[in-house]
Image (cartoon, rainbow, N blue to C red; front, side, top):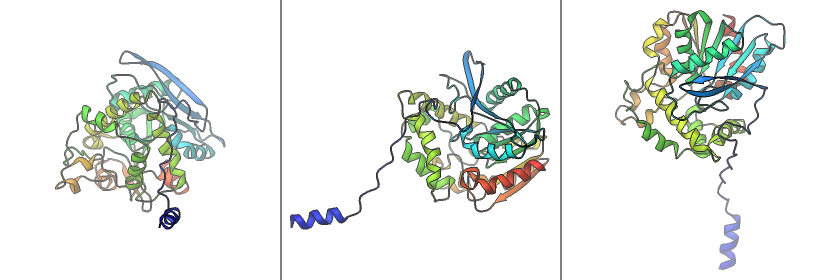
Length: 331
């Protein structure tokens, strides 16, 4: 009987082991970026801070346009690696910063995050880089920031491309309850590699998963894993507060540059909709649903639907995304 049980146990499939989380450091000190880093050092809210950024020259005949890429909350400048390469081949100079609070950039204690503050800091970075007029591309939370930048500095933005941006609808007005900072901090204590992967698989990649996505899960989870992980959790909680309270939906009619919305239609992102009462949860619009209304509010808006893609089309299908982005920039 004992041998039978032992053999049966050996024959049974083993449970999947959780993948180890790398310790990349709170500022991604041990995570490699695809291009050399540049640094913008300045003062913000009484602290010395610095922003990491990639600045890549065209690898074909220069077309005279600089494209600036803004990452989302769960992403970094490095996520744009393949997009930078494609744009450089097309003759663009490309700049991709890590915003304050994210990735390799500073995460100052007690920082009051706002899209206005991040936009102003980025304007200073572009001044240092000697760039005035830009084509601006923003993904997810970076789409909110890109829109804010265009509202604050319309003379600097020749065109705006928003890739599955947040902020096109006011989720608090649609039924999501405000979550105070202490509750956001408590949620951050539960964030780990497996929770990040589950969320991204369900919301970003419409239930599918490919091994290539693991690099970006590790990039995010690897910031939490080390001795300074509390610094990352605090920044992430404060950034969530910024996102939930600072949508740009009401200001879309004031956006002056032409805007292309590149929207993966399988995106299930509706910021913090899971915290809404079940009776109103379906009223909180996803990014693709909000884009259908937002494009009508934009004075010079255009909607491009990517029917087979989700929240992160540059990761999910770089070739299709680059074709759509190149077309948008040429317009």
